[in-house]
Amino acid sequence: MHWIVLSLISALFLGFYDLSQKHAVRDNAVVPVLFFSTLTGATVWGALLLVQVTGTDAWPALLRVDALNAHQHLLLFAKSAIVASSWMFTYFAMKHLPVSLAAPIRATGPLWTLGGALVVLAERPTWLEGIGIATTLASFLGLSIAGRREGIHFHRNKWVGFMIAGTLLGAVSTLYDKFLLGRLGLGAATVQAWFSIYLFALFAPLAAGWWRRWWPRNEFRWRWTIPLIAVLLLLADFAYFSALRDSAGLVSLVASLRRGSTLVAFAGGLWFFREKNGLQKLPAVLGVLAGIVLTALG
Image 1 (cartoon, one colour):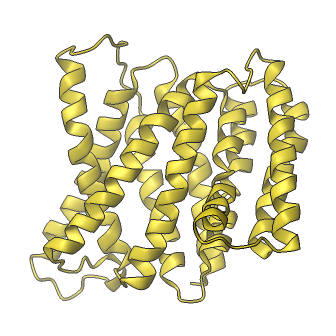
Image 2: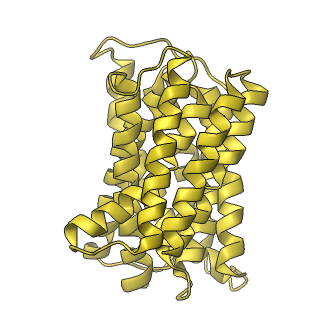
């Protein structure tokens, strides 16, 4: 399947993932949501690994997990640690922010990825990238103005800061994915399987501390969207990793197309959660996406 199609499929599933995440954490404790959703993902891949080691010849190549050495396992554990840190920020932010604001903020990830390349590698942006950066920043300002109508002031709201921090860590993870899948040549299933297992291992101690009340906490309510988070992310990430695995798949374009999930999450936030000021936010949301596309084309 072509990497552009895979990127768009990933965007669709990622949009529903955002909506499931909002439903799961709304007025709910975040740590056990993370624990049970990562447990679901680890269980799925653990079962697939168990089936694979039985030696069946009919096992599809797309789901085959390759043997790794200790160094490769350490690299995948590092990816899980980056993502776990990102999720701690973004899940708490999603709990307290409207999804119609949170999703567009997270969509600026490709901009931060480009910014990191400009700073670290001393690259100069092309004129299209410059226009894209300016468009995204202007649209971000538009989002902040729309947010004020809901009492959310971007410059002093800590949950906006949490979402930005999580987005920055997500941008680091995106660059790291290209290294793992492109330069090291690891398979998509291999990365996803061990990433899911190590992610659960990282959240398990936090969940134990939550249950033992090592810190003040909110109460937890089980919701059907908690395991759905993991299922949707598995589908979104498998399509995403497969797109990056393609030698023709440019990380900037894959990341940009994947941010189309913002439109799904934005529409869902208005429809399912009855969020306000949709018409006022829409131009800014479209501006964010336009800016990302321009930076990718540059």
